[in-house]
Length: 69
Figure 1 (cartoon, rainbow, N blue to C red):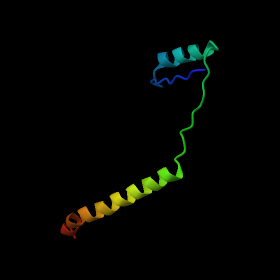
Figure 2: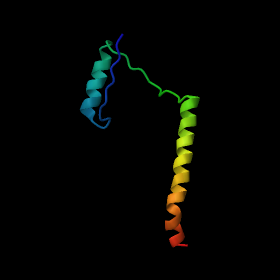
Figure 3: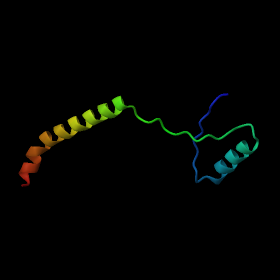
């Protein structure tokens, strides 16, 4: 079985009717796909990147902040 992904404007009545008609044929199934959960390694990499960005931000913004204190 093959998988296709459709994107459409959910506010477009014609698009909703066409999709409903396609699903009503019984030839196609609709599946809810849950996004993959990040792995522990991905979470750790994200934390390290976030911490590095915040540390750099504090250092680079300190002269600007000091100017207004």
